[in-house]
Image (tube, rainbow, N blue to C red; front, side, top):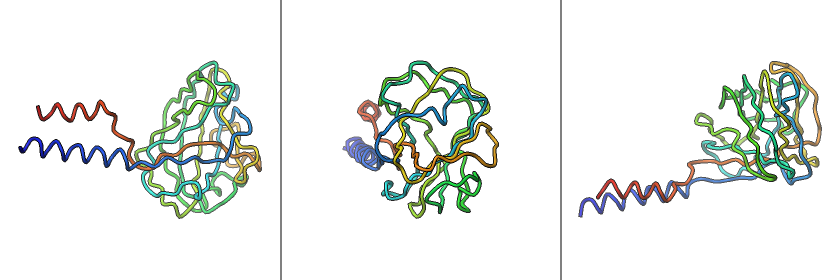
Length: 212
């Protein structure tokens, strides 16, 4: 009887875990594609955009950030060394030409540091840019994402943008630039997962096997 009680408890926990994640679309609708921030033809890159809190209706740990490939797909993989991805709360609603000012007085968190590979993929395919383990979103402020890298190789990596957006983007072809160029109406389309990722059915099978 005891082992069945423990199994029931494990399944309840697993089910609760599977139901606890929220997935939110950010950046608006698809109106085209753009190579920034993963444009390997450039010497280096620093880029930021802001995602509106009204699209992320839950506070909690950010467990996944995804971008969606352009409808034409990505034909050739690209590799970016010295890549850093940061997340930050921000009080701003639109980027300025100053990278640090765009944090809005908040402290950015490095959620990835290393080599980032963008593989070949079909059109309109969601790709996980980062799976953070150290950033909790409070939903009080908007969310800023920053990508930088020091060298790239490969071809074009086009991801979908919303050219009718309201938060804008800033970029510079220098990983440590203090200021950059702003595209006023370009918002990056993305998908944010808040909370735990659901448990796969195979995982439940492994839980069962413990109590055989």
